[in-house]
Length: 355
Image (cartoon, rainbow, N blue to C red; front, side, top):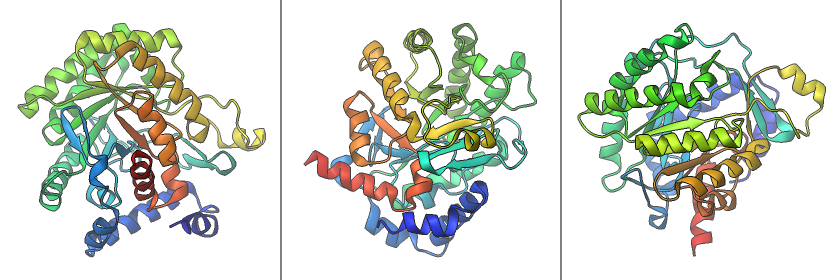
């Protein structure tokens, strides 16, 4: 199970990070396509003791995969085989877009971190929607009891001006909500110019209200809606977003996205500067992500579902987030370093801690 770190060093650490990601993801999808998923499910299905109720949904485990790994809904079922209790797809935009120029994904191995400036590269809402529909149908057949949950994370198309952002988000909400178990409004990526300005409460209120109405109307049911915030918000701004979420009756908050900070890194400053701008994820985000979670929990109590993401690597760290008030926990960066058995190991450690 722990052989992958060696595989990573030998096979992937020297390779362009985005290329390595595509190769690894392609292998996961290929194994599913040739029927290997059944074997993986027998090995990695989470223990029944981990079943979790949140957002009005039943999750096989509180641990899931954050948005950014499967940007276009092409590998949901293959990823579910690995033991993730939910897979959050995206970020998806109203229009297809190529994202920022390559290279745009970089590792800071000494920090167990990743810098990305991907820029929401995706095929657009209209192309992704049928993939979600097909994935949900397959999941329902494969998991007759409690199936993995599919979340959909939506953001602003880069070429759309900020004043037109609402309509752009509404396109995604209307198109994707019918095939989403829950939906996330992403206003916190640092890689789309101006996007984080939408975290201002005055701008965020009409955006969240409009997306919620569009999603529920399009789906013909209530689609749980969450907002994803940045770790770089000041504490007073975190409190303002929490108050707004309560005021609007949102279902939850995801805390947190990547950071633009480079404080406290072990990697040489010259190497960090060489990687350039972008959102930093991974172990360096651990302390701030946990602090934001605790602040939000103190404000919202049990009135909102909190999903914690940022720097978790072990079952003990996932349990720490649950103990701090999260209902669900997501990971991503450690997946790149730990490999395809990571989620299963997290679930095994969680189950052991609960005994």
